[in-house]
Image (tube, rainbow, N blue to C red; front, side, top):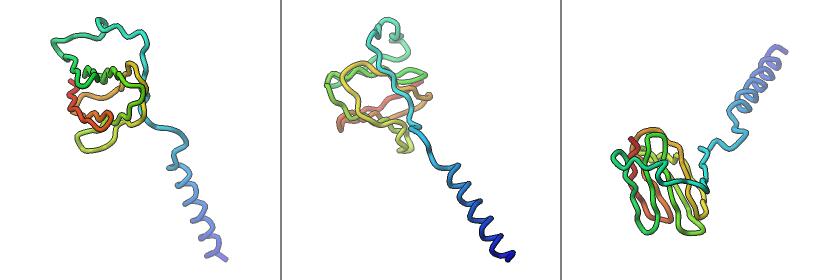
Length: 119
């Protein structure tokens, strides 16, 4: 009888641990689309110059990356130096801000990669 109680207790404990570790929502970093982004508000070209390649413009900042996308549909991935995916998703045409920590990242937009240094 004691062994049945112990097994039942162990199973309940396992279910509680599994339930606590299960993700209940989307834990991705929030990416903000900005319709009224003023280039002069975010430009401190001495620290972080903007880079434009194939119409894609990105500006690395200390707290994130500002991106301007010219196409209507864009597959975007932001990877850390370790290869960990920091953020991934599909973005439409427009201006976006992806918050990051200072560091070196690889920004992959529509199968083209860019190295981004956030200071």
